[in-house]
Length: 556
Image (cartoon, rainbow, N blue to C red):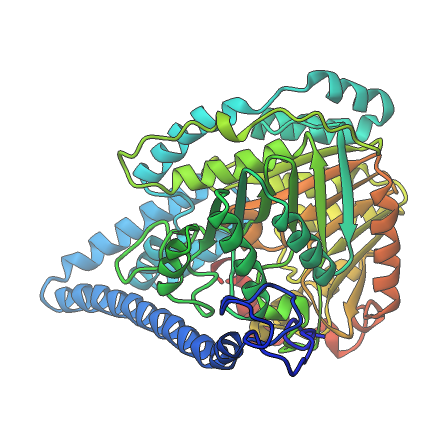
């Protein structure tokens, strides 16, 4: 049942009840003004979406024009100066050597090397536009300045890490890695609630948002200004009117098909501070490839939510463009929420204009007296393309290497580096039950073909592959030996592992791990195992088009 379907269909009106025109939420009485707004909503949404798509098309065309002009410029020059061919070849070779010397996986380097050597001008142009794995200097400096102020408020919690080491040494090793390279500590005093569907997560968030007293921070890759968001926005506006500091931060590219720039103005007019991360402009942008893929809600430094779902209708099965939608999430209450508060403030502050001072974040980091009912170890962590440390991938690989009995993954996309492939296959050859769940119905057919192209190389070494038949499985989770798990935003693909700002939560020694295991087992039962299909038969032979797409998957 959708939000609007759940509204009681009373024949009374607000005038009958002597109520003001602004309807009381869930009063059960239909206000003519509100009803008219709801009737207009689909048109407003379609208009907003069309505007966003138009902006996306315009920006895409502008980038294509830039590439074409770049190519024409050098092509025409070649007609008049043959020596430029030599210069181009030498420059391409120098770039190839520079790429080869970079400290990154070969699966990230080889596609660019082949493209640049085969098509020097086109390869160089594309690399400058989308291949640079670093931000502009100003963006790096901004993040360095922000991190120096914001991340300094993370506690060390060395005593809690030692406590984890005494109980579970393998988990403590991963927690120590996260702490040393990303500064995010492990916490003990935190209750964790697991949601096996995005719908359950949304309902819990709505309840928590209504009780916000000091601040609400929301950071999402995609927001759709429609039914699901309308429920959230109504609460945010009411809380902002009550004096709560409400901030919304979304990725411009991730939301470009859902909303337009008027969305920011609309929220600001209601007292909600709203900003878009890395706006998608028609100008050349060397930071364009790095998107904010995080999904975070923080309330009063007391409660936090994260998981795989964005704030759009399809994630909550209000609409069904790809069959049923499978997503998961968690709710944290206690000390670990501090890390999510700091994650949000880092991105919010780094996204400010140059010269703007970094605000004092201490007012958002009030100490709590919360006492957790669970005996859990919880470690929220952030990953970003700025520091060159691939935390998301390293955590996954570390978990695979520590697995002794089983290792499970859910991911909507499966585009692996050689290092990840080796870790998964080696674990299976050691006798570990390695299983991966992917969607049964794709949202992006090209990416789905690339995902399936990895199946054969995995299953011949013992990895088992399942496709979730009801529809699109968008959850991003891992689970090892009833001992450790992750829930967050990090897919098993190049974009998440190398290009995007991501977040996850490493969990150990928690009762919620049993719930995650139960959900994995349930999802296996709803899936079709395709392992045998890709061990033998026609599925083992990749057509040339699929081989080509897989080779250049890092560019997608």
